[in-house]
Length: 77
Ligand SMILES: [Zn+2]
Image (tube, rainbow, N blue to C red):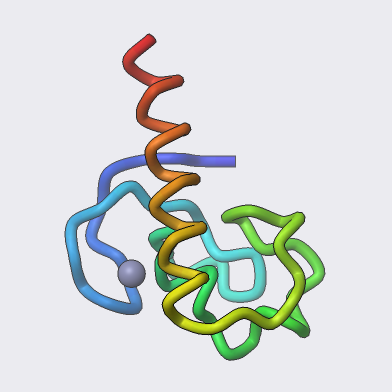
């Protein structure tokens, strides 16, 4: 699975993105993946696959920030 800094296909921001499982032509950042309306139908969300429950946007953002921090820590360490 590819992981790279790119423009997110959803929010348009330059972020760490992964290829969307449902839409391989899109690159999604963790924020958009976690708040994606199709997430409950997605068999394999590329960001935090274990987070399948419906969460509020605020909680999702917290989760996404945590995921991103962990990831960046891994990359720099
Ligand atoms: Zn995004």
